[in-house]
Length: 251
Length: 331
Ligand SMILES: Nc1ncnc2c1ncn2[C@@H]1O[C@H](COP(=O)(O)OP(=O)(O)OP(=O)(O)O)[C@@H](O)[C@H]1O
Ligand SMILES: [Mg+2]
Image (cartoon, rainbow over all chains, first blue to last red; front, side, top):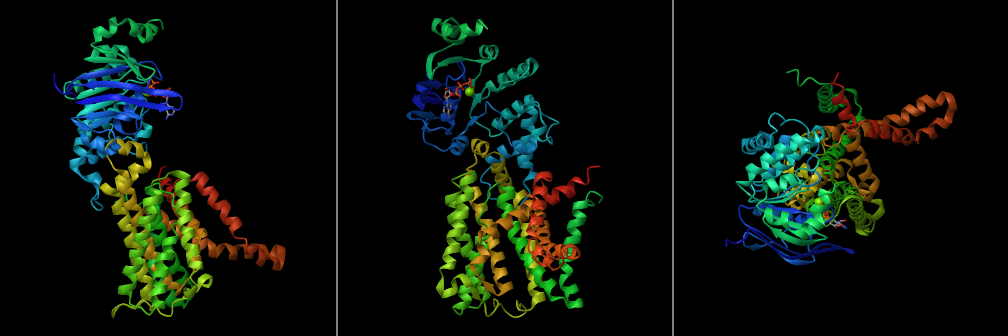
């Protein structure tokens, strides 16, 4: 068996009385799309927060590409190639779409202690940013202010921001959140294309998307991973059906 | 061509031309007061420009920015008092002291956000203010007279008021130009990104703290230079230079003129400081026929007019006067 790209061991996080991560063990193999599903409040976003360094775990360890990154700063993890998108859109709303993505490109083209040259005229930043925007379906929207874009476009831009950092692995927190049926179809197509290039941890409530895309699925409930396996195994797992999929069917 | 011919640019061009001609007008009419007033305006516009870099572009609401006026000014005053009159020694020390102080304050305060940041910058400024009050050797509360302006090599003579004015004016224009270059550079975009969404900046891989810190130091240094000029202008330093109300004035200039705009601080400084002179006279003029000699007392309350004026701009013109001028174009 190959060595996992992302290795999570015994990750634990408590918020007062709530145990948002309860000894989470999880391994994501290189090239795999690993979906994490679970009801609201299960601790999925908290898990991603600990992987990116925004949230410090109370216990446990995170390994990435053979390195222990448990205490690494947020920006340093991004520099290692671990990139996250946000469940609640988090962009530079007073910037244009192109400026947003160009900043993400800039973050990974050396240090930014350049005080004189006009950064908006640097082809080395603008060109990759344009290409990334086109990739997520935002060609022609480069000069639009983020604050005047639609929710669907914000979700596309979220992905562009992540891709522009040229990551090794994506941590996607509900990329489909709030998308209409047509937009969802396009997003699934985009994720399917990305899946062939990158390792992905996908947190998602949209079960159609999850079962269409995932190589492996882990199910979280109350901060614990109650099952982990191939999609077919998860679908057949009685505990999972009871805890999660069952109530979805009943909706 | 016509893209440049906008109401905002016309106002800025007229303003700059006016500032460039103040010594000429002053010489022709023999009006020395105007010269003194506008030297002060130019220097404080430079301080406001430096504040705009962190406040407007960086979203760092420093409520102690005048402390750098004091540090730059006191460095000159103390060195002169100790018999070191050379500008070649004074100025680098003054500027270095401002930079170092900004580095210390920034390193501590930039770990906090929002109200805490405001309070910490204010606290440090107050600390230095009271330190100045306690400096018995250097005049304490009453301040310290500069018996001589900074001495430079021959063609440069700061005691020549016209030369001094143009020196300040050139440094102001240079500060505005430098700020403009900085905010549009890679560094500047990082600073603005961190204002807009620091969390995202870190997530995409920027160690924002060190960039914001360097920005804070640049602004403090620039303001320290304004302090050097102010001390040379008034030939006097006192703790009042760095009183918190002076920091408040600088914020008012930036907000009034237009945050995160190239010429906003200049427009704001000119507006505030000219109104400060004009409003008392106006009030007196209007009030004398009505209340007679009591008008003189009424004129002392010119701030009662200034306050609501400022409030109107904050409430209805989010981009300050600069923003108003820019929006004139859209019709
Ligand atoms: N900063 C915080 N302080 C206190 N409690 C928190 C904090 N963040 C999360 N929690 C709690 O931790 C639990 C897990 O939250 P989390 O956001 O990780 O769930 P989630 O699985 O992402 O849910 P959703 O599907 O709704 O996005 C919840 O009970 C939540 O209320
Ligand atoms: Mg969540």
